[in-house]
Image (cartoon, rainbow, N blue to C red; front, top):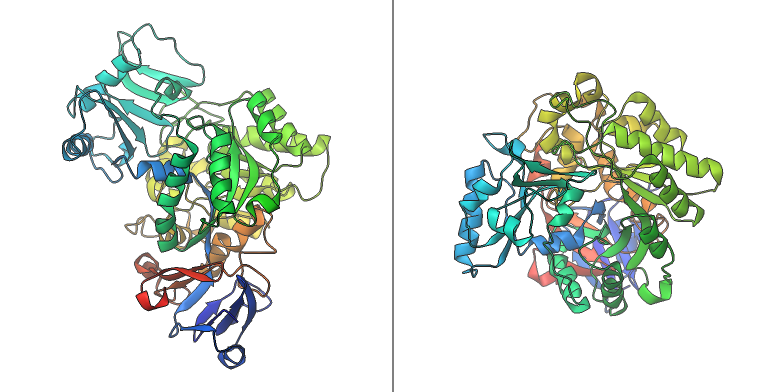
Length: 542
């Protein structure tokens, strides 16, 4: 054996053997799971042994939907997460410029603001950001990445003015005289070219820059949406493939393949991938499609007007006909769908597109899914189970959304939304993710919200729709085994079981028995990937 971990509280997520004390690893795979005595008897002279002293060991976390390249890029931006006012946001941008001695005329990027956390409850605009600088091109993204705010210098730089035409699927927000105020939603953001095209080597560096932080949080697998308009998808694919073939990835990546329009999806569908090129480390996954925007920005598509903004129902990204065509293209080509849908209007469109594709061409084991699945009614929830549709869930969204849901969509719809337990109990697969960098990829925050239905401050006291809470075992299963199912990898990962990848994480607390509040105080003590320790709080284990 290469490695034996013993004296551990092991939760395997394998229903046939849910608990164990020790685990043996050989050649990057789990060789045996059992009690201390039988596993330690397998040790040879060169076997490395780790005594966990009763710590909890679970499968490595699998984030079922995130944007890894987006996260890596934001490591170099102004961090606007947690800002409590427009003034604080402006101060952070100004301080960033000064601290980094950024020359006048340069582009300054920031991300993470959320007006719902501001005391004034309003979006920032050009005049606010002008207070940070009128000599720099300032571009800031809302946390959801469906709205951006820029300053006057940026408007000038991009040639945006009163005469710039409006968009059907996005808004250039204007004042009463028609002048842009520096706020853009959805596809209107395409006017703001805030990313230069990177060389393949630069993309590789970005990917690797995220790796230590993933390991520190116990993430051994991610399902990442990185085929965006800012970087040619061929370069992104090549960068990941190069790292996979070179053995440089310390996490497994299932690529959620997004494009813009039917013709672009045809090209992605034509891409070939063979396992001998990238092995178990990088695979092309589902066809990712955007159907609407975000709830916080009121661009999520609703069936009825917003309760707190009756002038709008949100914004559809595609008309039903084109969404149907894209769904059929993926389904007929044997690729699963992962459709971004937040509002019930987008949910209805997405469900229709999937059901239509399946009806026209029945196929077995097509794991189509909808990402986010926030605003739903009872009939939609039933559609998930009746049609074997996966729900890619982000429990951490409760943190930011619970105070605004009823105001946005009304009490009735709010009562059937974020319905994790209903979906789970009806047999729907609900892999957990974070949508990072929309939210941090901290798995403990995500688990806490799923289990307590509260935000990270413990509100509301009774939990938001508490009947939809999951127990700890269910939540961890969703963060491990369910993620593996979504990517057709349930036979090789997601459980601590003989023959599966030796990807696992040791925790500082027994989250299965501790008070739920202690989940937020839990840390990763050790992350093991491919049978090797890639992160440890204890230097002697590295």
